[in-house]
Image (cartoon, rainbow, N blue to C red):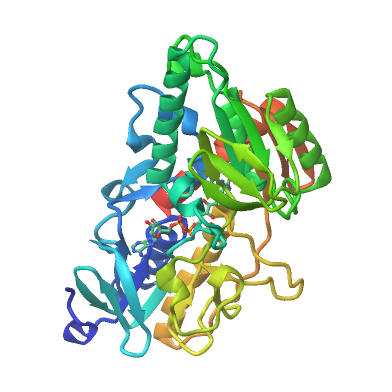
Length: 394
Ligand SMILES: Cc1cc2nc3c(=O)[nH]c(=O)nc-3n(C[C@H](O)[C@H](O)[C@H](O)COP(=O)(O)OP(=O)(O)OC[C@H]3O[C@@H](n4cnc5c(N)ncnc54)[C@H](O)[C@@H]3O)c2cc1C
């Protein structure tokens, strides 16, 4: 498919995944190496998806909304002189022959950076993958938005119809944002003037609501969710999903019109299959240089890694913020490896966390400062704009 590296004499760095991490790695390699390394960026989609904004299912449900609001065409975020973009689905990575398999051919590499993100974890729960919706991908979020409109319209047609029952499984930040968004959306405007407000229930599994977040954020989130009519049921792990019904571990059942699976993520299958050391959710274990232990020149960054900060031992979270912090280190280290220079170590310092809670409100912490309501929401919008700017300018 592409020139073998030896043919041009210029080493080839292949980056898998054009998400937050991948785009930023491509730009970093170009900045440090210029034409000394040729960069190939591979993604299955011809666009960069703004994944941090996929909880906005009500906006997706609005008539006339364009997919483009969440998906930036590759040509807009990547100049062809920085990297050659190859659209393709990665089906295999052969670390010994240094080739990447796509459905359409193979791509050889001298250096590899794996930035393939994550996929929903279903934990082997029967029916979850087949019957629940998800917002971890743009296609998934769009399907959810369309189904919400459909159930609202159906309910509007029947006089005295009970409100549609929406279950959100997973009480982390994604589940919390989705539950708030669905509960506060104006379905009369989005679906039908006679549409009833949905009945939204947020189920947390074995982990409590927003585990790992500071206590004041959890308290305010709970308060705002409950004011928006979201019922929170904690410690209600799901055992089985069937059409229109969840069975919980205690054998009780919950009916639903729409079930949204927000129970967490794991490494994509092509990463999970790699013969190297894996950590939680089959993520890749990497050295502080973000390199695979037995494979110098093969790096990984973003949601695909299982990495604890050196010193503190605290796990680096699977967030765009962490992906964008690690990417410049991985990109620099590709160039350093090619020049025989000393590699940099990755250490992560979180700037803060912010959760959107619908109706222009949110909760969050930026450094030592806690924010509630409108200011938190405004900051969240600014951070999201910063993420898209970061991938556009690198
Ligand atoms: C609803 C939601 C809200 C979020 N909010 C926040 C937030 O507020 N702040 C924050 O920091 N993080 C947030 N996150 C998390 C954040 O989106 C991820 O941590 C981030 O996207 C990880 O970046 P990445 O580059 O590792 O992966 P991604 O951005 O997911 O990029 C991975 C890329 O790999 C491509 N790919 C995957 N498999 C293949 C394959 N086999 N072949 C070819 N291409 C492939 C994908 O198409 C994608 O372009 C949120 C996530 C969700 C779902």
